[in-house]
Length: 153
Image 1 (cartoon, helix red, strand yellow):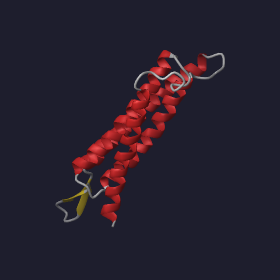
Image 2 (cartoon, helix red, strand yellow):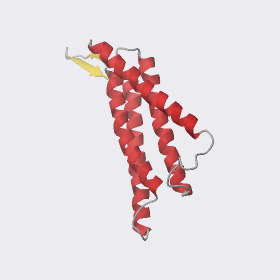
Image 3 (tube, one colour):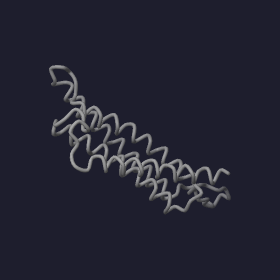
Image 4 (cartoon, helix red, strand yellow):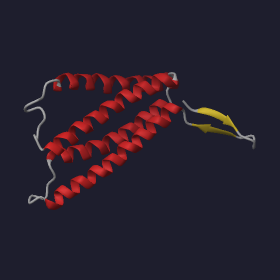
């Protein structure tokens, strides 16, 4: 949550709360990961006879780009939330953990080149992970949006 800080000139400056700062750092790191994945995608496109990257390399790159910007939204909601910093930080980190896990699983499939659809022959635990992802991403985001609404109301 934003905290006022008095300065010598008599004006008031605002500093971001640790919840927003950590979430912004995660957004930046995911964005850097997305850029690196873009290099991998480009390399595969450059050397492939079809000029296409493996589907999961493409998915990893695109997902990381989208998740980096989604993480920025989480930072804004955390910053403007009425909930305590710890609640906001845990809610944001749960969502971010699932973002990172999803990107990581796409990277694994891209490295292994084992499938072009992870649900055609799912490994044990895939559906349980998807259920946890759904609950974690929607639940964590809902906590942050509710905190924003509570502060606004």
